[in-house]
Image 1 (cartoon, chains in turn green, purple):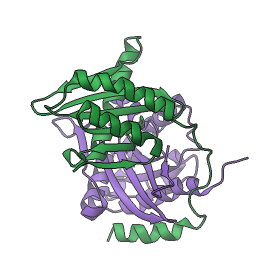
Image 2 (cartoon, rainbow over the protein chains, first blue to last red):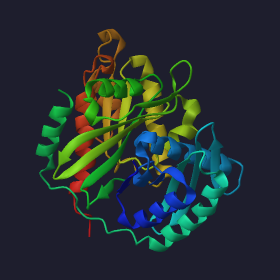
Image 3 (cartoon, rainbow over the protein chains, first blue to last red):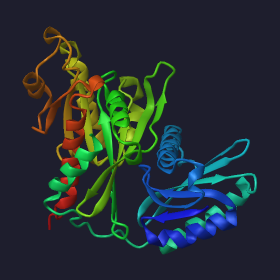
Length: 155
Length: 199
């Protein structure tokens, strides 16, 4: 069953359309440090948080290699396996750099993913609102909640 | 940077365990993985060499619980400690909300601790972050070794703790101090989220 999750709601519509059109199994939109902003697809196919951390690590390391070669970052990276392929790329937006990890199966192809990825980037750039203003998130007395939560974490 | 979802009331923070080679960074994460209930943690990923030295990073997501009405998740990372791997260390440090510096308490490792702390400062500065402002906790690991081989907490504080941040004596292999360290960095990181920005 396909599942959807979005920390930033404006990502969702373009993301869902992309997954359908590109025939992707799972697509993650994430920050350069590997935090998932939105996901759509068969989330059980991979451990989403681990996949995001690894994907961000791959992009960070290939970007660094590009920098060492004194060229612009590689636009995308594709790996095709027996049953699944992965496509990784990044783009700039008013919300800063964002990364996309696409997992696709035999019913799709890297060509199809690349074709609709360009549309996805355009739509996300158009939909991205400016970054929210920084404000206090937690109550000043958060320590009590934290202590209670940690006590149940390490029993 | 912490990711905050006001709609679903979720917070995700990135914590990086930093320090010289073989100081016990991976051991900290392994202990957390073993002790935290399965429903409160994700898969632990280790990108290591065939001799179990960290090559790129270890990664462990945990769910702290509900803090001020927000489901709070921490993503714990380690960096490779050896000097040789500075390029990958810098990549892992990107976007860190807090740093745990795991020092080796052995007297003969003091220079390695100082070099690694200087390296942390340098790598943060490259990202435009002042080491004096990032939430930081020092853990003095291997305090279970014989007394004549190690430095005391006071001696290590004198040498390493220039910011007077929380410092925790530990023996990560048996779990001593691991929880206290996680608690200290959690408080430091979350305190930033409870403060109004300066006008």
